[in-house]
Image 1 (cartoon, rainbow, N blue to C red):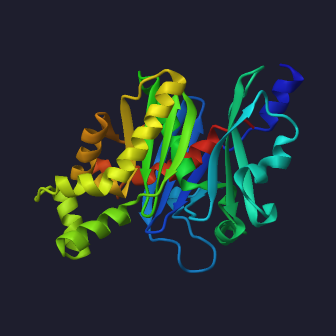
Image 2: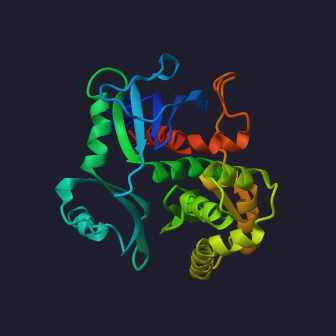
Length: 335
């Protein structure tokens, strides 16, 4: 054994992690174990959203020594940056400017090199800036005791890690995409040859759809949600009108990637609140002329009874995407 191999063994990373996604409406928690044979999901649970102050209490069955955290932040910035050639020593110094962050001390900055350029080839870097005002209150909940926090990232980016471990790695198609429908905004990520080639924020969320349905049909929100989820009424024309800005931006993004990468996007996966509306998903599939699937992050082996309170509808498993991705990001990291 070489000295380098010995050092790597001594710096062995955690073998078990609790992934926690602090969403606006709920907290999603998973526990994933890493062994010589691979990864195993040993537990998952949905809890109330983070409200009260003090240390965050992880259920005993989901508590590992380390926790990987994911948060939602409307003020955060995430970009897929491109640079000519390889990443040089000045990259870190210019990161805040590249992200459009005026005061670096007011944000937590991080990045991952997606593709390292050689010669005239460009480098692609996924970079993020999270305001300390959003990050610190969550980190303070883990100031003492177990689990100890080992990472903090944006929930949409954590979900991308879970997506990479699933469809990106396992699909036969070289190109696939993920749409994450948030309440106020959505995001689109497209991968080609297992590499992220596009990341875009779209100013369209489930709230805009619900508000338009309630105001147009003169109904309350609960009735609107029922109409969207059960297909009892034909509102296809209304959905076409409401979702046209979203569809237009998705088409522009798809066409850009297909021309640039000389590829064809035939499959689009979705997560987020809008996926609970079959009529909205059908409208999207029809408008884009593409195969739409609801992404299930539980693609890794799962212990029997690991999810006792799992959703009765497996199509709701997407709610755990960010929690799973946060844990995978730590477990897959090089020591």
